[in-house]
Image 1 (cartoon, rainbow, N blue to C red):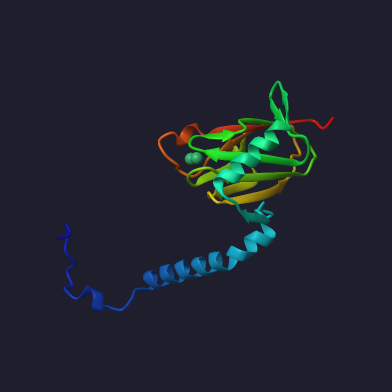
Image 2 (cartoon, helix red, strand yellow; image 1 turned 45 degrees about the vertical axis):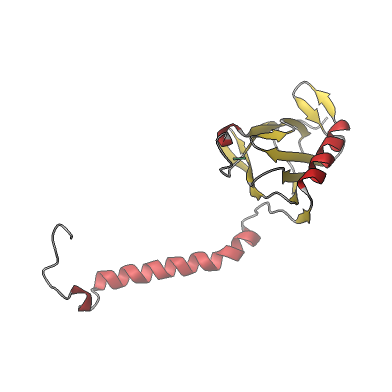
Length: 180
Ligand code: CUA
């Protein structure tokens, strides 16, 4: 029972007022505009979508990452990949490797997958979203993102998909250094 019932008992039978008509027109127009923009954002938004996706079992992917990590170089800030391929394995509640050392201006192929549940892969710098990358990482698939870093610095890799009780601790980083 509302606090103040409408004075007209059959209020639903009354014609729409002008303000309601304007409001509904605006809602429909904005909704249609956003709907039309959905594919256009992919073209004009310069987003960083995954262009390659492969099916892979979580165990095979984990083995691939381990194999790749043997070829990396351990430096003070983390693991430096031998080439342009970089592998990241998400698992509750870590990323492996935890710190990867990259160089500016190099086009990297970032491989992503997860061992257990859905995780999110996003990149942040100084608290701001960076690299136009925010992905859902689903077990059973290997995603490959191509990206370059223009500026040196620390970039946080943050899980943006709630994955359990330790979700907020699932952080790793790219340490980007000047190309030398
Ligand atoms: Cu992984 Cu949240």
